Length: 234
Image (tube, rainbow, N blue to C red; front, side, top):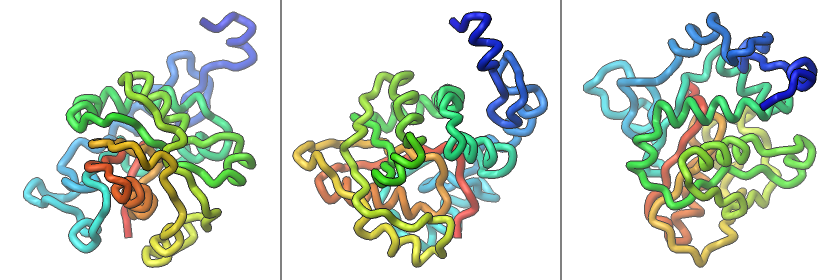
């Protein structure tokens, strides 16, 4: 419980508009983000919204082969969700992770348990980038989800060994090339049947795929992913 002084110094703010709101998400933002929730129809592979119920896969997933087995995201990556994630990622708004995790479990907890992951693996940052930022937003989110669901978070299972260029600066072909040797698995002796990979945003799937590939190379049978939001792909 916060003391009165703590409440004055660090008041509760809406994770979307940033305005002080003791209830967390303000009413105006609640309406906006509810409209961005992905509830179907969705791609059976990446979880991206599709136009028709009869459509099994999105355009990307009918043209690209993915290493991961399936994934899901909470929101479409549009305002105000996109700005909220930006502040979470680059402006030290770490406390947003608790809200994101609670909402993710509320919406997708049943599916996550159906996947039955033995561990949760956050997409790692390169050490230099992590030191500069001060934290890994994917790891913070993974810890919150793991705490709620009672699933172990394997923070050091996958390591980023190359300081790759930011993915948002690259086209789809260069995104894959950029990540070809970016990750390694440090606990290769573990034989896991199911792993859940956590990241903040899914755009083309290149990062998730790169992590899934190295996990499957060491014997993981099923790799699922979960992100806060998903973009429009290629």
